[in-house]
Amino acid sequence: MTARFQTRRDFIKTTAIAAASVPLVGAWLPNVRAAGPDKKLGVALVGLGSLSTHQIAPALQKTKYCRLAGIVTGTPAKAEKWKAQYNLPDRSIYNYDTMEKMADNPDIDFIYVVTPNALHAEHTIKAANAGKHVLCEKPMEVSSEKCQQMIDACKKAGRQLAIGYRCRFDPHNIECIRLAREKVFGDLRIIEACFDIHLDQPPSAWRFHKALSGGGCLMDVGVYALQATRFIMGEEPISVSGMETKTDPVKFKEVDESIVWQEKFPSGVIAYCSASYNARLFGRYTAIADKGWFELNPGFYYDGNRGRRSDGKEIRFPEVDPLGELYQFAAEMDDFAQCILNHQPTRVPGEEGLRDVKIMTAIYESVRTGKTINLT
Ligand code: NAD
Image (cartoon, rainbow, N blue to C red; front, side, top):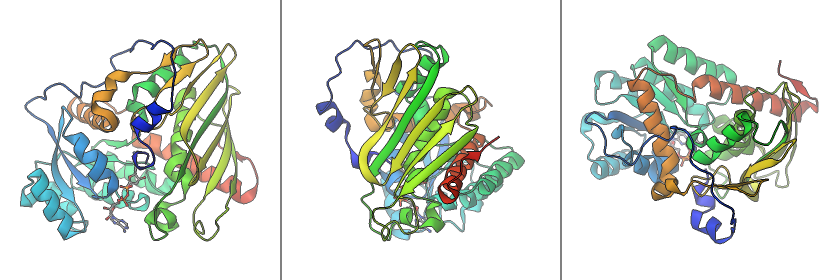
């Protein structure tokens, strides 16, 4: 969730990084702009809320290997509106109780779960039972048990399960992974990462209710900072500790308002991170190595991400700009389609979502107990 808190234009206006851009490396950018092949995989969106409406459905129109082929919604009026807007046939309109009937619908190849966090398992398992592959939004679910059930259901059905970690398709984040792996600035020592936003939603919104969200800022936006520390390191943390503060205990009665945590990695690197629903820095990270540093600021936006390196070079790939905030979503869906078509594993499998949920659960345990939690 970023677009409603900022625009790329706002960011560009306030930023003046003048160093040279580094070249685009690798063949990791799916060609989302070229004309598509004859057969595109059919995608059914499950949950037609903000993200589906403003990012995913428009991004689907820009993909090379996908097309919007169906919807699952509990609101008949939305069903009518989407049916007309996207020219969908009646047989591809479902509600949450009928979605298993997709088993008889060859137009739908995979579903994209975009419902509140605590419903992801239910919708994933129904789709897997209907023989569909599943792309599921982050955080994967609200407990590791439910994540495991999703993995098991998709395995049993012989279908792929991917988590919507869109930053893994953003060239700026991918370039940072390269800088870390190739030790361009030497051995990493410390990572700082944060994603701090103002959650401008009414108290009735599901994000404030633990039963549907599983947690607050950590689960929703902190997961980006956690992911970044893990993908930059290419290692799993061996211990975590956390602390939270609530300045508005009424609004944030059920979920975390602001939280900070530390992670220790086997190679000795430490990360310190923060997330907030009541502060404003958006998302950024800095990786500090023994010979220099690199950073993205912002690093987790839908678009407009950019960064700097200690040698004065900029990390910036303006070629993603024509698709703007749709780019990462189009790239992630095209990548998943290619994985399905070519029987290849996704870089963002369910196991990856499960790891993050396990770590976030440990951070909450540390907040509760005041102890460092061992993850080994
Ligand atoms: P939203 O509230 O705008 O939409 C949620 C949808 O789920 C709505 O259409 C709602 O009607 C439906 N729904 C079904 N059952 C529901 C229930 N019992 N209670 C409430 N709503 C119910 O939320 P959103 O911002 O679109 O987020 C949906 C998912 O996408 C979440 O898991 C969120 O973490 C994720 N997300 C990811 C990103 C990203 O950048 N990848 C950004 C925003 C949201």
